[in-house]
Length: 248
Ligand code: PGA
Image (tube, rainbow, N blue to C red; front, top):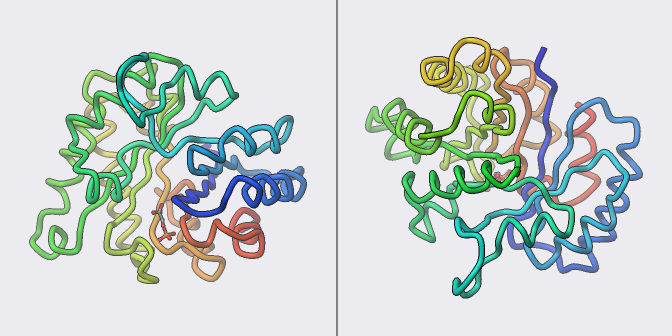
């Protein structure tokens, strides 16, 4: 039985004082939640948010991490720095990083391997653009993102990997994939995981859906066989919106 996993990607929103206040409220409001909950504030908010949710059910993730231990990498953040402030999760390969910062599957794979080797749990984002979907390239794009992104990962390490299927055309646009379309992409991804890591890993694999998830559409998405949670952007920024999604 796969446990529902609801995550909030705050992207470049909220200043540290706002983030800490909201995180504290979220931690208090989710004391009895039955689902796994994660929030990913921007790097500068991580210490305050990690402190605010200490001892609660809320897991804190970074939105990115560097693929080296330490050294001359201006502007970057290491796994050791995250772990030192109690952050053990990281989102990798988000489409905004692929689109705006040129991250390739090969580069994302380096971070995946490094983060896992350093004991972190990762949330690997995959998903196609509208052009790719309409051009019949959905399966090729997802196969490359999964096969290259997870190259060299062991079946044992997959217990520390969550996959988030986020069709790029649905992110921040208000357009959601239909539950049928999302479920069929998730089923395809589960098939790729089975081919690469075997049946047991595939059956246990948590695959979140992301892209304009909100209180009004979360139930029908989560009811789909292969959808095991959500990675929420815009609607994770306020308790009013995020709590009904968690309690869906
Ligand atoms: P959205 O973002 O919910 O605002 O569409 C989702 C994401 O990018 O993770």
